[in-house]
Amino acid sequence: MAYQQQASSLSAVKPTVTVDVNEGYVKKKLLTYDDINVQVVDLPWSDYIIWGKERAMVIERKDVGDFINSMLSGRLWEQLNAICNFDDKDIYTPVLLLEGHLGSIFKWHKISKEQL
Image (cartoon, rainbow, N blue to C red; front, side, top):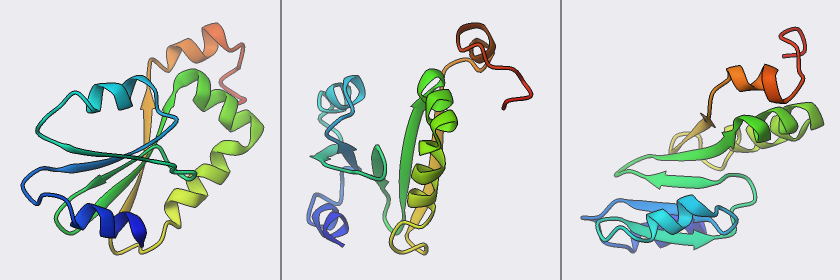
């Protein structure tokens, strides 16, 4: 796969993070660190890939609002299916990273516990 080839050609000393072009503040923050290699590419199925020596984590990051909206629209299940079936399962570990306080779901999104 092209991403794997790109990562393996980078310095073995520094960890490598592949970041989707649409990730805003996290992408900007990662680019300020000198001790990691950052690749910015179009990742239609995830937000990040963190490369290890033999394995990589394919990460879909959601804040609480995006999590709820994605769940209600059905988009969440498509995204999770994509990262769970990503390329070579012996190399890639899928991760859903949920950011924020789940209690805000009920306060701001007018969703009941039963709907979850």
